[in-house]
Length: 134
Image (cartoon, one colour):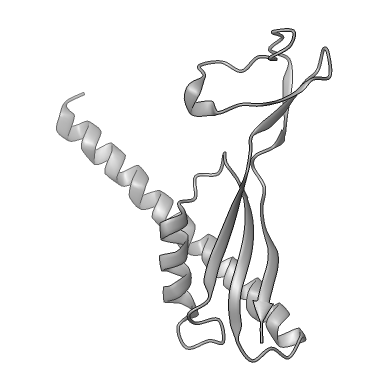
């Protein structure tokens, strides 16, 4: 595979991720506006998001898409506060829970007993933690 072809494949993946972020941010905006209406809010100031570090969402693009989508709504100008949850695995053999930075390992095994029988318990979450309104 030539360098140009690898670049095009990488670019396509990047474009797909951006489109994914657009649909995710539309869902977030819908949730925020629904809760703001239910609570008779006049303006949304801040949205706190809890996002696992294993998600492929990029903070900068989430804010850009949120700004674009929220234009002409009470959420226009709201800031996203993003808190990343660590990737935590639990060993099926010894019960040890441990943090893994996936970009730093080539295989996942228990930090205590070295077993590869592990289960992901945190790191893929994505939810609205809080909404600040006036």
